[in-house]
Amino acid sequence: NAGVTQTPKFQVLKTGQSMTLQCAQDMNHNSMYWYRQDPGMGLRLIYYSASEGTTDKGEVPNGYNVSRLNKREFSLRLESAAPSQTSVYFCASTSGWSTDTQYFGPGTRLTVL
Amino acid sequence: GNSVTQMEGPVTLSEEAFLTINCTYTATGYPSLFWYVQYPGEGLQLLLKATKADDKGSNKGFEATYRKETTSFHLEKGSVQVSDSAVYFCALPTFNAGGTSYGKLTFGQGTILTVHP
Image 1 (cartoon, rainbow over the protein chains, first blue to last red):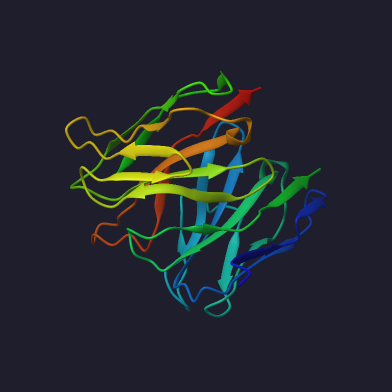
Image 2: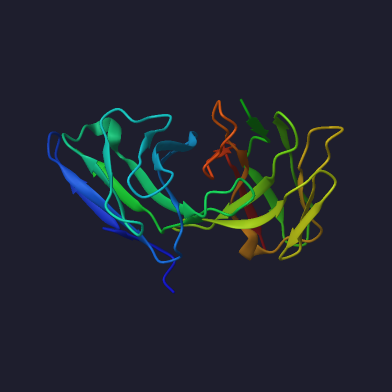
């Protein structure tokens, strides 16, 4: 039982390059989330998926796209990376109830030059 | 909508000191309340939670009581250890206009705790 896994762990991009961050969970959770964490800003929700086949914008969706490939996998794509997207990205999942715990992946540290 | 205000840090303590990190919330009704902890280089993990008013959550020597009268959920530990050095986040559910959360959470800004030997 691996929980929530994310790849890659580290990535350096040049401005304008694209990349996809991968996330998978093995807990049969309905809901999945992508956050970014910046110093002094706490965690900000980028996109979430309440169930397989649905996605919705969070607090800071501009510059990102997501795909809920199946119940296990939820990917985050940067089409044209910008230095402002330098951050640590976390994927999380939960069953979807407001009383339940969110389980987080280990994070991806992204630097855009 | 629901919101949470967390004590600003950083907090620096000596080993065996008493710890309090303040968290107050604004919410409709009595949603669940959570404390998450993030150790260096890791993702967040649940530390404790309380799912209804007046409940006390506890784990690893940490405690927090859901106090609806003061809309607070302060985190406490009687004797901190160096291994408790981490960032601590208070959180509560975020609901849409239809009253569904889909498990979404609103997090506080985080409090950095450093414990010295």
